[in-house]
Every structure is written in C-alpha cells, then in structure tokens.
Image (cartoon, rainbow, N blue to C red; front, top):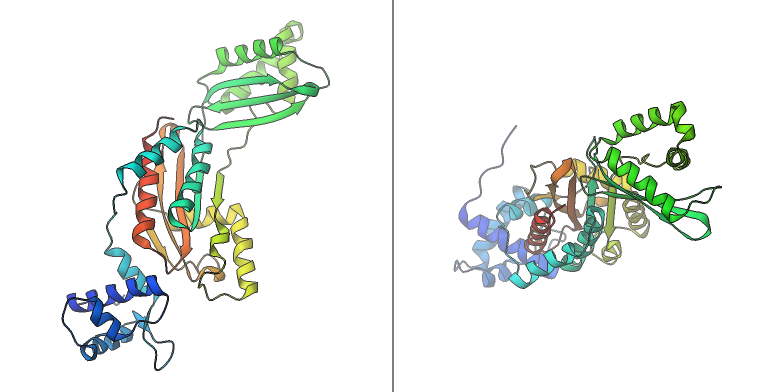
Length: 345
C-alpha cells in the first residue's frame, strides 16, 4: 500500500487553518484568509502554492475555478488526529455526573447520556447498552396494579432493569405477590437467568408443586413470561432534527432516506459496531459514513465504548455533519463516557 507523503510543518499548519476556517464559515477558504489567520508571515501567493500542493495530494478541492478551497474527508481525518481532549469546566463535569447519578438504571443513564450529548454538541446524541451474554439475576419485584394487572420487574446484576405488565384471569393480591417475590429472590438471586429458568421449570413440574400455593401462583406468572426477557441491546437516539438544514448536500429525498435510516435501531447499532472498535474509553472519530449508507457520506461519528461491571457494555457517540466542532464533540463524548463509567452499577 502506498503511504501518503508526510506533510511539512508549514503545509500542516496551513491545512489546519483551512479546516478550522471552513468549520466556522462553511465557505470555500481563500489564500488571503489563511494569510491573515496564520502567524507564519507568508504571502497569499506563497500560501496559494501550498494549497495547490495540498489539492494535488487530495486534501483540498476547489468547487469553482475562482473560488477558494474546501477540505476533503482526507483533510478532516488529518485534522482530527491533531486534536487533544479539551477539558470541560469543572462545573460542567460535575453537572454531567449529577445528572447521570440521579438515574437508577443503566438504561436510564444511557437515555440521559444521549440527551446530554445532544445538548452539549447540537448534533445527534446516541447511546446503546449491550447486555452480557450470560446475565445474573439480582432481584425480582412484583406490583399489583388496577384492573388485576401485575407489573413484573426483573433486575440483573449488570444493572439492567426489565419491566413487563401482564393480566391474569386469577386476581392476585399484593401480599401474595410479595410471597412469590420473596421466594424467587431467596432461591434464585445470584443465579444465571437461563439456569434459574431451568430450575424453576423443574420445580414446577414436580407433583408437590400442585399442593404449594406459592408455586401454583408462580406458575401463572411464569406462563406470562416472568424471567423470559430477551438479551437485546437498548438504543437511545436524540436530536435527528438537528441534521435538517445542515450543509449535507442532500436532496429532499436523500434527507428522508437518512432520517428513515436513523429510525432503524438495528442499523444504528450496526453503525456503532462497525466504527467503534477501539478498547474501552478510547475516543474514535470516523469521517464520512458512506460505507454504512450512501446518504451518510457527509456525516462523521465520534464515540467510544464503555465497559461496566457484570459484563454489560455501552457505546456512546455523536453523529453530525462533517463540518462540526470536533474539539467540542470529542471533549463531550470523552467526559460523558467518563461520567457513565465512574458511577456504581
């Protein structure tokens, strides 16, 4: 594979200035503008020569003959490699931790994280929780509701909370539900869910279960799916409306395709899996997502993975136009990830 030539310090500074100017203005950047922004003391003519070289190397393109240059995907990739994580204000970091700490469940924190990322960056905030392959039961809660319905709550050791509302032909009071809950928590807390389901089925098949009031009522709840929860990721996405009106160079139909694609949770998870591969805690930047969907060519993804106790993992990210404030977004993703990871499950 042929490697790109290493840019000289002068070329790198000029390219960095062009990218930052383009991010701020959205307009082609002229050599005179670069001359004013940089401190190298180069004339516009000298800068034009460097810009011509950068164009030949694929870092810049010229939309019109008389216009300035705009950065390509290659230029944005070079630019983000030079950025360090900028620390947020201490008060802002504390606010992130406080907002997440106010939510009890991991899934609730993921949903709050997507909201905070949207709020901090003005782009699309994404958060996903991926359950462990073998989940361990922490506790069960059963609550009687109106009209004979029952709220079944199952909490696993990785902090994931699953809820289901069911209706029974035979009405059960709260005292009976408490007895069933106590039986489950006493006998199965700390068990892997699959093993707990098998053991519970074995006990209910025994003849003695017919004469045990708790087990007979427990069999009713089991028939309604108690402990039968799918190990499916939970995905939260907020701020897709922020993409409307951005300079994505999309027709109205292509924009509709993009918004439809982001409504498909499975596709969003595939994008996170495809582009966020680094070890936990390391921020990744993917410039241009056309490999995931043609309408995402002008988008960038910035995100990271977070490993949590109990085998649960999470992925948080920001999706936005290629012309975004990368320094701000990288900082937001990094600090929200730190806050997410630091809280107890």
